[in-house]
Length: 177
Image 1 (tube, one colour):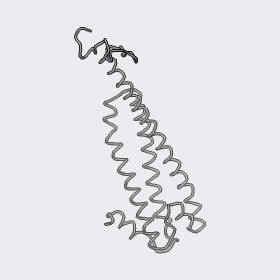
Image 2: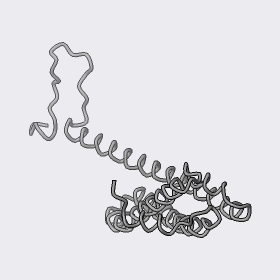
Image 3: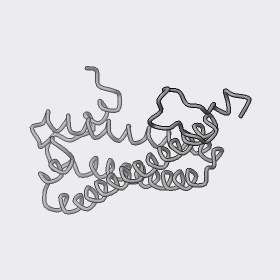
């Protein structure tokens, strides 16, 4: 597997001993925090646009959402590069928290709140994304029901009918209705 340029840069920029990892980790967590915060704001606006049914607003917010998704992917690549570099150096590499916990006391205390906040924002992002997904699903269900009403003239066929065919035609298919 060929490492990306970003992973190679991360691996080259990481120190050999645990003592020098605070700055790269802090930089990554700061970038991640900023990206997560911006994405939370965009997802909140998207939720409002979904509720309002503002198609133009939803279309306009798409590029910003894509840009932030790209930044999150970049943070993930940097994170993976750091963990790979930590593994090569025999340091804890399961996650950023385990790497931070192996650092000297001062660095560990400085990084703990940043890691905790990043995890919290990640949960908020999941919640916000799920909320938006539910809104979209409800809208699709509503539209599907509206199409069914238009297609059947609002009349549902009886569940138990002897002939097997409904006596009513659909509005879209039967001009007599």
